[in-house]
Length: 319
Ligand code: XMP
Image (cartoon, rainbow, N blue to C red; front, side, top):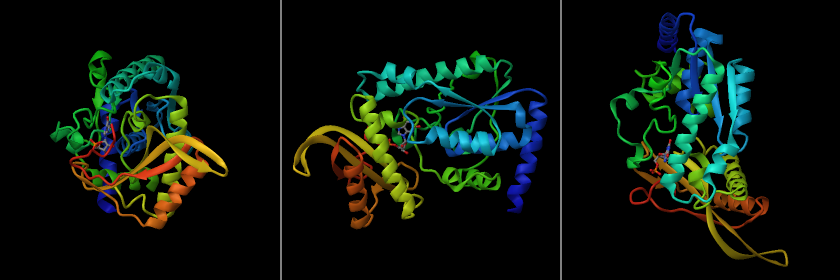
């Protein structure tokens, strides 16, 4: 794409001029915007960029490894992985209220990020994957007051406190342009066309208490759904598809054994902008396969249900 190549050249020049020989830090979330921002800034200033990825213990299966492989091994970026899962999970013990979960995770993120920046030392710029719609609307996505577009970056107030200058190379671009830019910069389809994932991660996909056992269950179930969605090419056709852990036990039978295990709900929706959504009508055979696999492979689950609610009045996430 000629125009995109030209755009990259122009942006790279601008970033080099702005940054000079100074240092930039970027909070990588694994999402489209921060990934594209990282690739663009890295193209411009290479070693002068350090990316920080926070493992909050609420990520999907193999997500940390995927980020390390792509940004560390393939792109050779300076990448710091903050392994702070225990810190987050300790603070979440016994917390069931969705908004409290979000607040704790947001505050802990700021704390951890700040510490990482201090460890890195000389940092002058904080880069963010803010895109044009984030600039023009300060409206919460999906009408969810907790789901402010930038809330999952959780760096509000950080730049002033740390005397960092802001670098936002995507702030003139719409989402589709960000994706094209990402493709041009060599990011894989799995990143450029990734489904949205909430900042609080699996915490809001476990209804009620978050425990290691429940995290294992929802993570395994989610990985199976994702694998099947990708195998059948549905992953890129729907808006979001994920598993939700329900703290409900029901009776089942496996072999000659009576079981009393948990329930997984499948949430698969079509949407244009997350403001409204409808449940995806996927073939029954596909749903049957996913259900069988989850029940057979995920210990502690003996029932899978399908969420057939639309938004509104339901939301996409369960919390
Ligand atoms: P709801 O559940 O309100 O979600 O229909 C609309 C969109 O927002 C995402 N979402 C979040 N994203 N932090 C985020 O970064 C959050 O706390 C959060 N809550 C919901 C949700 O996945 C959907 O795409």
